[in-house]
Image 1: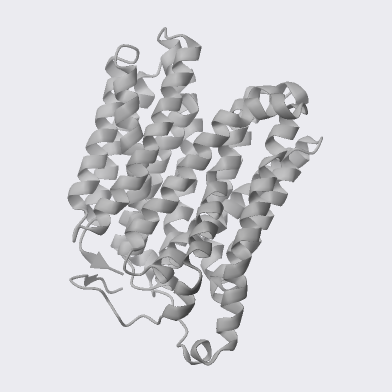
Image 2: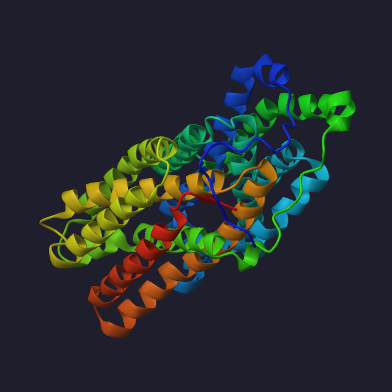
Length: 413
């Protein structure tokens, strides 16, 4: 397939939304995007502090409890390739609305008094988030063609803010609502309902435009041919996949690594929470910088170097350098997430292309990422320490560097 040099903005793509329609309610559009993005990580982060209680409620083994967080990640990879076809058939606005409602239903399903419902809810949540993960870059590309990287920073930051708030408020919500872990986790379905209501104006607007003369005359967007054979698409996918693997592995095990090296568990939790908070800065700033660069190779190298430095510090001085490594890893992980999403909008010329590349990259990404926590835990059990998993993560950092060097080229699919 052809890969072209992106020396100047491409203007051949159709503009599905007239300028006057896009500007009619900019605050409604921004509010809808922000509220949808808040849901995209919140229900995953909210469950982490509750895993122990869920395990005791159902009498689950440690492995079965780990699946509560692994299953949604796995099914994000399974559901991602289906989304571009859905958006072409039903329109991105309706697909996003449907995904948010399904996400809320999955949150409620997960808290029913049944182990089968618990895991079924995890599956539904994973698929719904996959649809949103793939739809949002295409929407941002279409709605903000000249500020796509900036808006990518906004919604990637909002995702992390939602995750941070959810992780921090799950236990207080449990106490406030008085209904145990079920009431705390189920409450996040209300956020999905609020997002769905806020997104309704976009669905109504898209229906009016499809009925109008402009929409009738618009040429249908064609998918990118041979995307699965494109080296650039694979480089973006591997950058996202292995970066996500590193993130999810440390999300699962960083507090345990610190605690097993002698740090108080409470302090280890604070270090981990601080690292998550720092991710917000990286997720916001890196896409802004990426949008101002012709080539993002240098930015990818910086993110890779920071990832490697943070993991190396965790390896050689896990306790004494904990706060420093947490800061470095927070910037690297949030920045890598933002840069990966920015690659999707910067390496494509159309909203349909962004959705298609998002489907491929996030399918590969989440399938790869799901193996991280399980693989690291297995290596820890096999070797009796965290040295081997961390060294392997450093090797993977080099692979991310090679992928980022290729993904950062001034080319488009």
